[in-house]
Length: 150
Image (cartoon, rainbow, N blue to C red):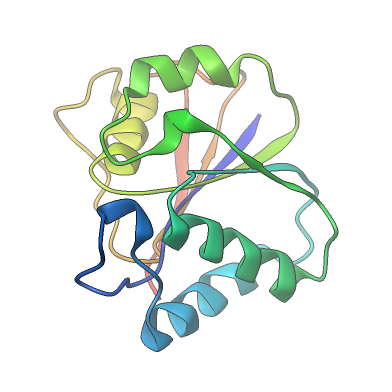
């Protein structure tokens, strides 16, 4: 099973709420660079946090790839979500998945998938893209194939 983890691009520092922060121009450029790494990949689903910057990031990925694949908004991909809950939720999906999320969650999820614990999170900068592979999506069951920073 192939799993792609994408942190949103650079976002504006201040908004009415954290969930309402938009991508900056630099953030949009970062995401375009990362999205290009997904060209030709047979993505089965794009799952994204409900936060504005993650939704914008997911939409840029669709534009760059030229796909009509819907963006599925899920509440368990926010900055403070539980990686353990995400593992339970991911059981419902098959094929290559792209998760668009935030730190600290995305780094902790990557660490959990690779090491079986969250004490060694993946170093996910803005628009970083991690490629993981394994027989199943489970704690300590995946291998890091690539970690790209725009």
